[in-house]
Image (cartoon, rainbow, N blue to C red; front, side, top):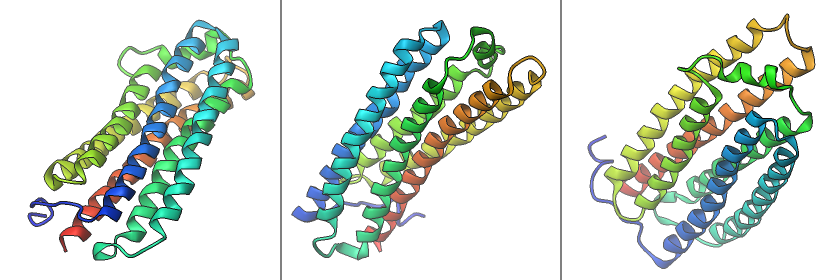
Length: 229
């Protein structure tokens, strides 16, 4: 591990160009996730028309991210890279894309059918583990991945440290997810089955965002390790 944390710089015009494509793609990925915050607020207040509109915006951002993803894959596939990192760059792009996909799917699940206020507020019953807490953790995961990507060009220690922060935030998100799922099913006698399943699937898909972000952070560590080999 000590060697991983040494001085590291992505060298060469090709690598810098690819890293810029990765960063451009990830900025849209992050925006896709950030849109969910307003979507949650609207669902919380029962504004389901705006939930639907925001879901469409999330889908648009995910499509834009897909377009940059395709351009980056073509660029990465054109030539050789130091230390055999081509596959890791491609895998990093795929994992980043999974973040946006999970955000789009979460928005779609929530916007499919309006949820009555009583049922939706189940996700906010306990002040120490709410939907807001879950979103805060997954947003930390997503934002910190971007920080780690920014460090890739010049600071291995920071890139790895940021990636490890993503892992910790994902673990916290997972714990909150489990609490929320348990709480949802504790109300199974009070809410309709379809509503229960919609709430469950929504929480699971939000958690997928954190999982995908952690996978992205793992690829950052792999890139650092191979570039230092």
